[in-house]
Length: 248
Image (cartoon, rainbow, N blue to C red):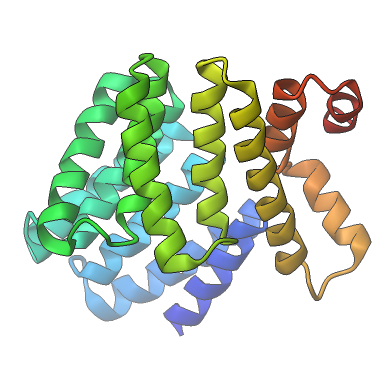
């Protein structure tokens, strides 16, 4: 029963329906606590899921304690070098990075990456978000060669494991666009931004394959996940038409 609630909650979260997702995640947590007690890996996942949801909503102060609670439970029950521990460290790093707390984020990303490399190897798909996060920090610091190395590693792994058109590939491509835009290499930046936009647009079509066009448009208006890469593409290419469209 709790797995059904969790699956539906994850879907609601991916569609930006955060209130519904919150209710479903808490139902999952209540069921798991009743059945499994107060310490179990599934409970750690429940706390992490709610923390991830709150991070998506920008509720960072509420998200962090939940992720910390999940991490403590995972370390106790699964050990210091379990992939789930690496995953929670990465989520916490993402949280700090969104708040531009780059020192804290880098430390957590580095800890996550060390576990991934030791336990899962250098070609595992779980490396991708950590490598991308570290790459974005290096862009902020204008350490462009280091950023390029990290992002190209992430892109190679994502393409190999997931294929050319997966959403995660698009996320890395957007970060690559940011890198080349920061280096004033506009032509290359536009290529990466264009790829990110095409992939994200395809994802929206897939996500709402069985919904009405009106529902899809309402969701895009409220949760504009493709706007960033589209606007970046428009600005990098100096296209007034694209810029106007991106701001609509």
